[in-house]
Image 1 (cartoon, rainbow, N blue to C red):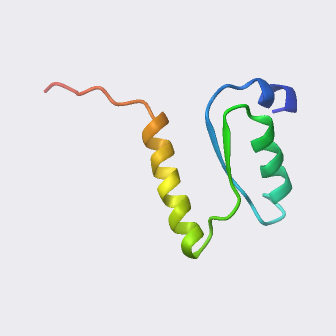
Image 2: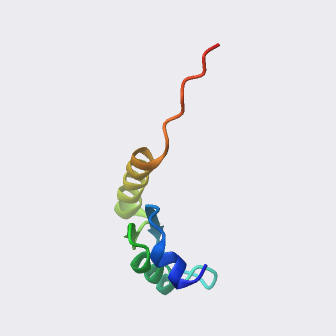
Length: 73
């Protein structure tokens, strides 16, 4: 994806910062800034930050995942 596409995408996104060569922090930060409906979680790998991020991830998924229709047997 190029920056123009990311900037036009209206899908809500939750971006967790990376910290290695394959997932650099700066790229995650830029992606979060480009997406109009993004939330950036900078710290999430351990301790209180992990607990907080896990709660936010669950809330984000609950808010944006479609509800499955009941299947009648």
